[in-house]
Image (cartoon, rainbow, N blue to C red; front, top):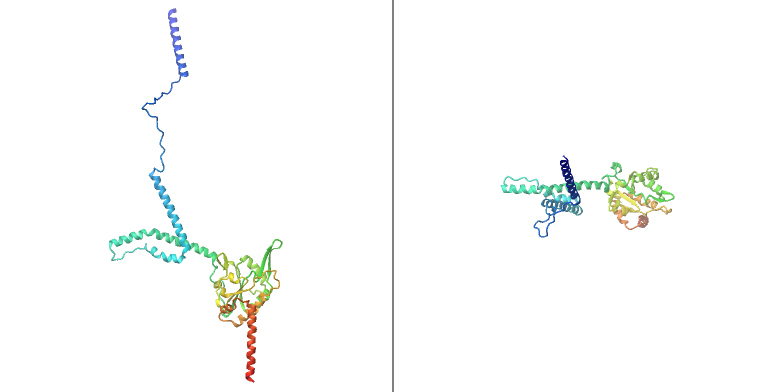
Length: 356
């Protein structure tokens, strides 16, 4: 029994020793990667190939379409801009009329089949250009109407119709700033408004002969309170402010043709008459006034001439004003009046001599 037990223990010890040796070899000596010989026929794996965008025909097609659309839009915008700059709306409307009517194709009864097909194809091809032109015309019409609302007087008849019994009356249009008043701003006093010397007598006297209208490029919020304080006797019949002017070349002009009055019976008196009015033939230039000139008499000096015009009532005031061009009108009127009186006096004396 002892030999049998001894043999089994020896076998168990050998088995444990072999198991420990195997485990130590696995930990201390990991298997090495197989080496590839330099002349081996086995090639290393190739990296994955990244697809090239330029080699993709779909991407090429989209890029070409994108640039084509951008080019067409740029060309169309440039053509529309040039047409807007070079031609008026009515000129473009007339020039493109045949193009827009070409889409309305209706074959005649005696047209051949080939002619009908050609006409149909042509009208179909012209549909897109014709629609583009119509869109341009509609857009330009809308834009010009919006611009006109800011640049043109708000009405073609700025004044109501004259009464039948007043149709012989002349209309005296007066500017406001530097003609009837002058306003100035300083840091100490802020805004101040000054009346021109003689303005009260001027308005009160001439209101007997004229329909007096103030036509200025100032805003309503300024004009109304100033005239309320200036014209306490209500000699000024109408007030026209900036919305009634025509905006052109960066300036606001008085357009006397929109007054709803006979231009032969309209006079415009202003310190900047020729620079601010579109009808220079109706202008009466007067010296521009500022509050420092306290001895100014220009308004009062104009009273004799204006009263003479109202009393004699010439058929057209424009030739009369043209005869004073380049002259100081009050001074020239006095000179002519004295000359006329001298001639009348000479004629009377000659008449007395003939009687004797």
